[in-house]
Image (cartoon, rainbow over all chains, first blue to last red; front, side, top):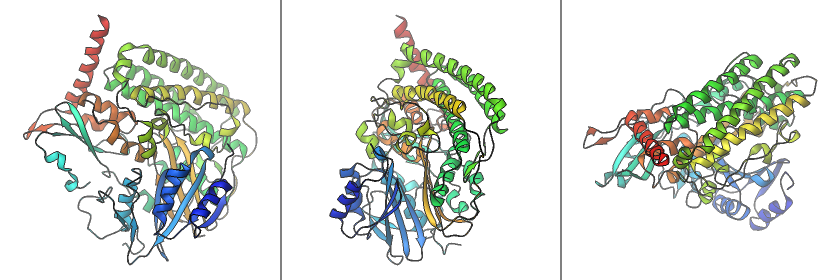
Length: 146
Length: 404
């Protein structure tokens, strides 16, 4: 199989989700920007219909809000399809992927405790890494953390 | 890491909890497994991690791009090449450059030598767990020459500091090639010996076969990586899927088995050592001349993803730059993060004697197991020693059965 992104997959995504903004960084790295309300459906499409694997997710505190990048890997072509989304800082909520993707369980817990994003529908949203006596509501990866 | 984590099953008087962990002095990830057992059978598993959370991602954001490789190298003492490797690839992805050919070959050689030494480490410990201390002693005896080889090339037995953004930090001297070849011959001969000894032994087979099975569906759903995935029939390997550096310039095969049990995981690791030796030999033979680094002035704003196939699976690094000399965000994901989570399904239904082995089969840390204590009605019942004894006893029983 040819290595790199495929027009076919990108067209499929565009047909299904017309609002998605596609940025091709390089042959094997693409970024799909989408509204946070649509992330669940897009992730489900990538996992179930394309056959991508959830590699990990990254949470970042930016000026526009709390950004989450879901890194999906399409292994036969060695390509990363990264879903980028921003959740507003004053109401950081997004639908959890855990009901169809157990691989998302730990990383959602991690982002929840480090950045304070709530994952709706997560079965067990308790801290993963921080100590038991870590004060609630203190998020170490936020910009305003001291 | 929350005591309210306890699931309802734990409170059921029918079940007992066997805690494995939490502190472990050897590897970088102390984990705490709570086995929920009914008699000897494991019915559920709860995993707590984070005891040694050091905030590497945060620290990386306070360091310059050139300092970060030294930091991420210290994430893990066993695969200390993998993290700086993936980080360098990530920053090179921002810059959209490739290191010079000679540097690519050097980095590939070190990556593969590291894989052999890591697989040896696992094999030795697995031998110890099932009561084959001879396997443990022999494998670790021949891991020594590998560490000597690292010292010869890089001046250090661990923490090799070979990767930098845009190249390699040290050259491999041409007069050292024959010495490396000689070491490789020795390692190949001994790997053959171990493979035959382990795979031909009926007791080891009986002890590992059909234990801790991770099905292909679960492997995909949990997103497991490396030998754990390849032993369950998921043929993923970054070196083949997304080739970087010299991996697409050499011939080698990806090792895949379908069974998903501990034996398959052992087979994948053993046979991979031969592939690694093959890769190193070809790299030495075709090593191009030339510079070993590209000079990098500034890192432009942008984002990059670096992935390297570490001994345990894909290491993933995401780096974002805003044009300053420090990363704004550096996300790190080690393969064990995905692999350990899959233990929840792999260990269910097996006995306590098997649990230590199954939990170790994804190649996380081992000493946790030696810190195991079972409490029943507030009284200590099993210690780590007892668990090891249980595992050894099962092997002895099998040995006796085979002698008949």
